[in-house]
Length: 241
Ligand code: ATP
Image (cartoon, rainbow, N blue to C red; front, side, top):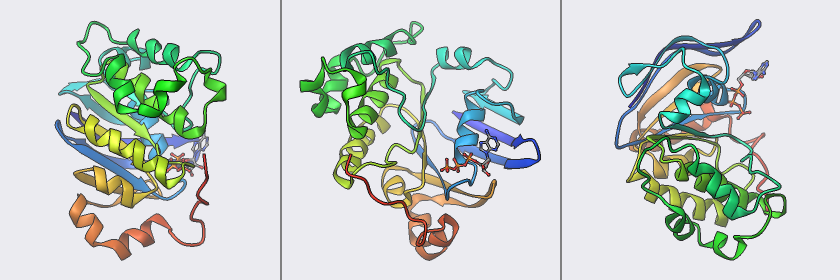
Protein backbone atom coordinates (compact mmCIF):
# COMPACT_ATOMS: atom_id res chain seq x y z
CA UNK A 1 0.00 0.00 0.00
CA UNK A 2 2.90 2.31 0.80
CA UNK A 3 6.46 1.90 -0.48
CA UNK A 4 9.43 4.10 0.39
CA UNK A 5 12.44 3.77 -1.86
CA UNK A 6 15.60 5.58 -0.87
CA UNK A 7 13.78 8.07 1.34
CA UNK A 8 16.20 10.63 2.72
CA UNK A 9 15.45 13.66 4.91
CA UNK A 10 17.98 16.32 5.83
CA UNK A 11 17.76 19.53 7.84
CA UNK A 12 20.76 21.52 6.63
CA UNK A 13 23.77 19.40 7.55
CA UNK A 14 21.72 17.05 9.79
CA UNK A 15 20.74 13.76 8.16
CA UNK A 16 17.50 12.75 9.89
CA UNK A 17 16.60 9.82 7.61
CA UNK A 18 19.42 8.17 5.71
CA UNK A 19 18.09 6.67 2.46
CA UNK A 20 15.67 4.03 3.75
CA UNK A 21 13.37 1.52 2.07
CA UNK A 22 10.16 0.61 3.87
CA UNK A 23 6.93 -1.20 2.92
CA UNK A 24 3.49 -1.02 4.47
CA UNK A 25 1.51 -3.91 2.96
CA UNK A 26 -2.27 -3.76 2.59
CA UNK A 27 -4.11 -5.55 5.38
CA UNK A 28 -1.29 -5.18 7.90
CA UNK A 29 -0.08 -2.88 10.65
CA UNK A 30 3.59 -1.90 10.44
CA UNK A 31 5.59 -0.40 13.30
CA UNK A 32 8.38 2.13 12.93
CA UNK A 33 10.34 2.06 16.18
CA UNK A 34 13.33 4.00 17.44
CA UNK A 35 14.71 6.12 20.25
CA UNK A 36 14.35 9.90 20.53
CA UNK A 37 15.77 11.58 17.45
CA UNK A 38 16.05 8.36 15.41
CA UNK A 39 14.11 9.91 12.51
CA UNK A 40 10.61 8.47 12.97
CA UNK A 41 8.64 11.72 12.90
CA UNK A 42 10.71 13.00 9.99
CA UNK A 43 9.81 9.84 8.04
CA UNK A 44 6.08 10.33 8.63
CA UNK A 45 6.24 14.03 7.84
CA UNK A 46 8.10 13.28 4.61
CA UNK A 47 5.50 10.66 3.61
CA UNK A 48 2.74 13.24 4.16
CA UNK A 49 4.80 15.74 2.13
CA UNK A 50 4.94 18.17 5.06
CA UNK A 51 8.72 18.38 4.66
CA UNK A 52 10.90 17.91 1.58
CA UNK A 53 12.73 14.61 1.04
CA UNK A 54 14.71 12.73 -1.60
CA UNK A 55 13.78 9.32 -2.97
CA UNK A 56 10.44 7.85 -4.02
CA UNK A 57 7.14 7.43 -2.20
CA UNK A 58 4.53 5.16 -3.77
CA UNK A 59 0.98 5.05 -2.43
CA UNK A 60 -1.20 2.27 -3.77
CA UNK A 61 1.34 1.69 -6.56
CA UNK A 62 1.41 5.28 -7.74
CA UNK A 63 4.27 7.68 -7.20
CA UNK A 64 3.09 10.55 -4.97
CA UNK A 65 6.46 12.11 -4.18
CA UNK A 66 5.60 15.48 -5.69
CA UNK A 67 2.00 15.81 -4.49
CA UNK A 68 0.82 18.49 -2.05
CA UNK A 69 -0.06 17.32 1.49
CA UNK A 70 -3.76 18.12 0.98
CA UNK A 71 -3.87 16.10 -2.25
CA UNK A 72 -2.40 13.09 -0.49
CA UNK A 73 -4.86 13.46 2.38
CA UNK A 74 -7.73 13.69 -0.08
CA UNK A 75 -6.52 10.38 -1.55
CA UNK A 76 -6.84 8.80 1.87
CA UNK A 77 -3.35 8.94 3.32
CA UNK A 78 -4.26 10.23 6.77
CA UNK A 79 -1.71 11.28 9.40
CA UNK A 80 -2.39 11.65 13.14
CA UNK A 81 0.60 13.75 14.24
CA UNK A 82 2.40 13.61 17.55
CA UNK A 83 0.79 15.95 20.06
CA UNK A 84 -2.79 15.23 18.94
CA UNK A 85 -3.73 18.66 17.56
CA UNK A 86 -7.34 18.71 18.61
CA UNK A 87 -9.17 21.96 17.78
CA UNK A 88 -9.34 23.58 21.22
CA UNK A 89 -12.35 25.83 20.51
CA UNK A 90 -14.48 23.01 19.05
CA UNK A 91 -16.39 20.38 20.99
CA UNK A 92 -15.51 16.70 20.81
CA UNK A 93 -18.43 16.15 18.42
CA UNK A 94 -17.43 19.06 16.19
CA UNK A 95 -13.82 17.86 16.13
CA UNK A 96 -15.03 14.48 14.88
CA UNK A 97 -17.28 16.12 12.29
CA UNK A 98 -14.29 18.03 10.90
CA UNK A 99 -12.83 14.68 9.84
CA UNK A 100 -15.83 14.09 7.60
CA UNK A 101 -14.86 17.02 5.40
CA UNK A 102 -11.70 15.19 4.21
CA UNK A 103 -13.58 12.15 2.93
CA UNK A 104 -13.46 13.19 -0.72
CA UNK A 105 -16.32 10.91 -1.64
CA UNK A 106 -14.83 7.73 -0.09
CA UNK A 107 -17.22 5.51 1.77
CA UNK A 108 -16.38 5.55 5.43
CA UNK A 109 -15.89 2.44 7.50
CA UNK A 110 -16.17 4.38 10.76
CA UNK A 111 -19.02 6.88 11.10
CA UNK A 112 -19.74 9.00 14.19
CA UNK A 113 -21.59 6.22 15.99
CA UNK A 114 -18.72 3.79 15.32
CA UNK A 115 -16.15 6.26 16.68
CA UNK A 116 -18.13 6.70 19.90
CA UNK A 117 -18.42 2.93 20.15
CA UNK A 118 -14.67 2.58 19.63
CA UNK A 119 -13.94 5.21 22.30
CA UNK A 120 -16.71 4.99 24.95
CA UNK A 121 -15.07 7.63 27.23
CA UNK A 122 -15.94 10.22 24.56
CA UNK A 123 -19.69 9.59 24.77
CA UNK A 124 -20.35 11.77 27.86
CA UNK A 125 -17.88 14.36 26.56
CA UNK A 126 -19.59 15.09 23.24
CA UNK A 127 -20.13 18.75 24.13
CA UNK A 128 -16.82 19.34 25.90
CA UNK A 129 -14.41 21.77 24.24
CA UNK A 130 -11.08 20.48 23.01
CA UNK A 131 -8.98 22.51 25.44
CA UNK A 132 -10.74 20.90 28.42
CA UNK A 133 -9.86 17.31 27.47
CA UNK A 134 -7.18 15.17 29.10
CA UNK A 135 -4.26 13.91 27.00
CA UNK A 136 -5.89 10.52 26.57
CA UNK A 137 -9.22 12.02 25.54
CA UNK A 138 -7.46 14.25 23.03
CA UNK A 139 -5.68 11.24 21.56
CA UNK A 140 -9.02 9.45 21.16
CA UNK A 141 -10.53 12.50 19.45
CA UNK A 142 -7.51 12.86 17.14
CA UNK A 143 -7.73 9.20 16.08
CA UNK A 144 -11.52 9.39 15.83
CA UNK A 145 -11.32 12.47 13.63
CA UNK A 146 -8.82 10.70 11.36
CA UNK A 147 -11.13 7.69 11.09
CA UNK A 148 -14.02 9.95 10.12
CA UNK A 149 -12.09 10.94 7.01
CA UNK A 150 -12.24 7.36 5.68
CA UNK A 151 -8.48 6.62 5.55
CA UNK A 152 -7.06 4.16 3.05
CA UNK A 153 -3.88 4.19 5.12
CA UNK A 154 -3.66 5.49 8.68
CA UNK A 155 -0.35 6.86 10.00
CA UNK A 156 -0.03 7.46 13.74
CA UNK A 157 2.84 9.27 15.47
CA UNK A 158 3.41 8.05 19.05
CA UNK A 159 -0.20 7.60 20.15
CA UNK A 160 0.96 6.29 23.55
CA UNK A 161 3.21 9.27 24.33
CA UNK A 162 2.59 10.68 27.81
CA UNK A 163 -0.47 8.53 28.50
CA UNK A 164 -1.08 6.41 31.60
CA UNK A 165 -0.87 2.63 30.95
CA UNK A 166 -4.61 2.13 31.33
CA UNK A 167 -5.29 4.80 28.68
CA UNK A 168 -2.64 3.33 26.38
CA UNK A 169 -4.48 0.02 26.70
CA UNK A 170 -7.80 1.61 25.72
CA UNK A 171 -6.27 3.38 22.71
CA UNK A 172 -4.55 0.21 21.52
CA UNK A 173 -7.68 -1.89 22.00
CA UNK A 174 -9.40 0.52 19.62
CA UNK A 175 -6.48 0.39 17.17
CA UNK A 176 -6.69 -3.41 17.14
CA UNK A 177 -10.22 -3.05 15.76
CA UNK A 178 -9.17 -0.36 13.29
CA UNK A 179 -6.36 -2.60 12.03
CA UNK A 180 -8.83 -5.16 10.72
CA UNK A 181 -10.26 -2.44 8.44
CA UNK A 182 -7.24 -0.55 7.07
CA UNK A 183 -3.44 -0.69 6.89
CA UNK A 184 -1.60 1.21 9.62
CA UNK A 185 1.88 2.72 9.85
CA UNK A 186 2.56 3.26 13.53
CA UNK A 187 5.47 5.26 14.95
CA UNK A 188 6.28 4.39 18.57
CA UNK A 189 9.07 4.50 21.10
CA UNK A 190 7.11 1.98 23.14
CA UNK A 191 8.13 -1.17 21.27
CA UNK A 192 6.22 -3.65 23.43
CA UNK A 193 2.88 -1.96 22.89
CA UNK A 194 3.54 -1.35 19.18
CA UNK A 195 4.57 -4.95 18.51
CA UNK A 196 1.49 -6.23 20.32
CA UNK A 197 -0.57 -4.54 17.58
CA UNK A 198 1.62 -4.74 14.50
CA UNK A 199 2.47 -7.59 12.12
CA UNK A 200 5.90 -6.28 11.17
CA UNK A 201 8.33 -3.65 12.37
CA UNK A 202 11.32 -1.57 11.42
CA UNK A 203 13.79 -0.12 13.93
CA UNK A 204 15.44 3.19 13.08
CA UNK A 205 18.81 4.06 14.58
CA UNK A 206 20.17 7.52 13.78
CA UNK A 207 18.26 7.62 10.50
CA UNK A 208 19.16 4.09 9.32
CA UNK A 209 17.07 0.93 9.49
CA UNK A 210 19.02 -1.15 11.99
CA UNK A 211 16.58 -4.04 12.29
CA UNK A 212 13.41 -5.24 10.59
CA UNK A 213 11.23 -8.31 10.74
CA UNK A 214 7.95 -9.79 11.89
CA UNK A 215 6.62 -8.58 15.22
CA UNK A 216 7.35 -12.02 16.69
CA UNK A 217 10.97 -11.90 15.43
CA UNK A 218 11.53 -8.45 16.85
CA UNK A 219 9.90 -9.31 20.19
CA UNK A 220 12.20 -12.36 20.46
CA UNK A 221 15.22 -10.12 19.99
CA UNK A 222 14.30 -8.23 23.11
CA UNK A 223 17.81 -7.40 24.30
CA UNK A 224 18.94 -6.15 20.89
CA UNK A 225 15.77 -4.13 20.47
CA UNK A 226 16.32 -2.53 23.87
CA UNK A 227 19.82 -1.46 22.95
CA UNK A 228 18.58 0.14 19.70
CA UNK A 229 15.76 1.90 21.47
CA UNK A 230 18.09 3.27 24.15
CA UNK A 231 15.89 1.98 26.95
CA UNK A 232 16.99 2.57 30.51
CA UNK A 233 18.39 5.92 31.53
CA UNK A 234 16.16 8.12 29.35
CA UNK A 235 12.96 6.08 29.59
CA UNK A 236 10.13 8.63 29.66
CA UNK A 237 8.34 9.02 32.97
CA UNK A 238 4.82 7.66 32.77
CA UNK A 239 2.23 10.39 33.05
CA UNK A 240 -1.22 10.23 34.53
CA UNK A 241 -3.20 12.04 31.80
P1 ATP B 1 11.20 11.90 18.66
O1 ATP B 1 10.64 10.63 19.14
O2 ATP B 1 12.04 12.62 19.70
O3 ATP B 1 10.22 12.79 17.95
P2 ATP B 1 12.12 10.97 16.09
O4 ATP B 1 12.61 9.58 15.97
O5 ATP B 1 10.74 11.25 15.65
O6 ATP B 1 12.32 11.48 17.57
P3 ATP B 1 12.90 13.15 14.40
O7 ATP B 1 12.04 14.13 15.15
O8 ATP B 1 12.50 12.72 13.07
O9 ATP B 1 13.16 11.87 15.31
O10 ATP B 1 14.38 13.77 14.36
C1 ATP B 1 15.46 13.16 13.64
C2 ATP B 1 16.68 14.07 13.68
O11 ATP B 1 16.40 15.27 12.95
C3 ATP B 1 17.09 14.51 15.08
O12 ATP B 1 18.49 14.60 15.10
C4 ATP B 1 16.46 15.89 15.21
O13 ATP B 1 17.20 16.69 16.11
C5 ATP B 1 16.55 16.42 13.79
N1 ATP B 1 15.45 17.35 13.48
C6 ATP B 1 14.13 17.08 13.54
N2 ATP B 1 13.39 18.15 13.15
C7 ATP B 1 14.29 19.11 12.83
C8 ATP B 1 14.17 20.47 12.37
N3 ATP B 1 12.99 21.02 12.12
N4 ATP B 1 15.31 21.17 12.16
C9 ATP B 1 16.53 20.61 12.39
N5 ATP B 1 16.71 19.34 12.82
C10 ATP B 1 15.61 18.60 13.05
